[in-house]
Each structure stands twice: as structure tokens, then as C-alpha cells.
Length: 79
Image (cartoon, rainbow, N blue to C red; front, side, top):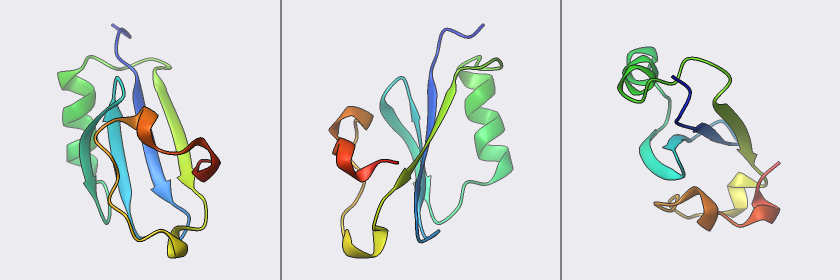
């Protein structure tokens, strides 16, 4: 267990969230339902400290979709 890294990315206006697993977009939407998060954690056997959380700064000024790769989000956007 714990081989996979999960990252949760949130817009600071609370309007959009995404889950990346090992840097790849797995799910995005206005919210992340509990069952979706649990299914991803089960699928990727991520049950220890293998998760990060980020907030997109100035979300109202960024009218963009999130990229497929976490590393493609500009670092200055993340808190």
C-alpha cells in the first residue's frame, strides 16, 4: 500500500475540484462525491499519507480547464 500519490486540487472560489493520481487527472467536477474519492483510493490502494492538497489562487480570474497532468498546472497558481 501507499505506492500511489493522490493530489486534491481546489479552486479558491469553491467552484471546482479535481483528483490527480500519480500526477494524472482522475476526476474533476463542482464537488468530489465521497463514493468517488473512496473508489479512487481503493482502486489505487492509497490508504496512508499519500495525498496532497492544493488550492488554485485567484480562481475567478482563471477561466480554464484543469490539465491532464498535475505538473502542467503553473506553480504560481497553487497555494
